[in-house]
Image (tube, rainbow, N blue to C red; front, side, top):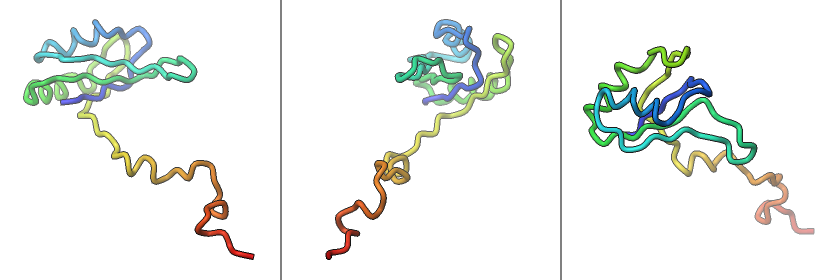
Length: 105
């Protein structure tokens, strides 16, 4: 199960986050996100736990728990579908630039 962890401080490390979740079971991976464009640290990350029961137990016990002076927000990761993510974008083009909408003169 992929778990979202939010509201983290900049002092959080992968090892520290792994230690918190390993109290409840096996942790496969830990990812803390950094913006690729400007290198700014983001206040969230993801934990991958292979056992769903252990993951649910971790979520229930860690959500709202204080860690390095912040109260963590923890829940099952919900990923957006690709279609939904791109359906809002028009590539910066106006609808009149699309060939099928241009009027013939």
